[in-house]
Image 1 (cartoon, rainbow, N blue to C red):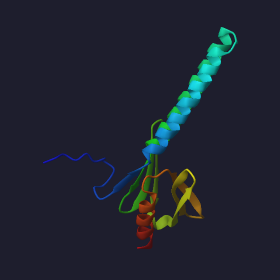
Image 2 (image 1 turned 90 degrees about the horizontal axis):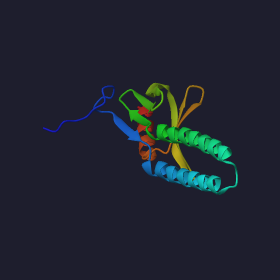
Image 3 (image 1 turned 90 degrees about the vertical axis):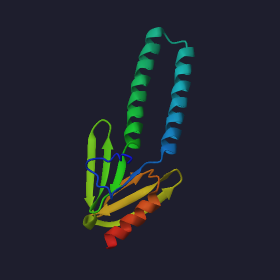
Image 4 (image 1 turned 180 degrees about the vertical axis):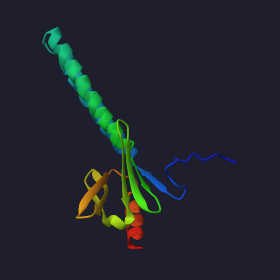
Length: 149
């Protein structure tokens, strides 16, 4: 009998959705290309060695911060359980947003150029956005059916 790997806080009837990996690979490729261009410009300039080293250290720090932000955005997930929507982020700090279905007013999808996802309206039209969701129309349909019932 094959073993199933289940997360301890997620029930077996829950559905887990993740972000689209192609978007983040594309953003990482663009980011790497820009960093390579900056390094080439810095190493071919006529600045002194101290200035070159300080710029390279500064750019490596910026690269690390952007890389961690991209990875943190990518590893987030949205889980549809039987009573609530759970949005989790977990790389530097674990953040868990639990939205019960009875608190959700409406769920809308959006798709503008290279940006798509869902918007969950709760309370006094407080918006929780979840961008680059791989199956955002499916999630919106499931959420709308759960909040109407």
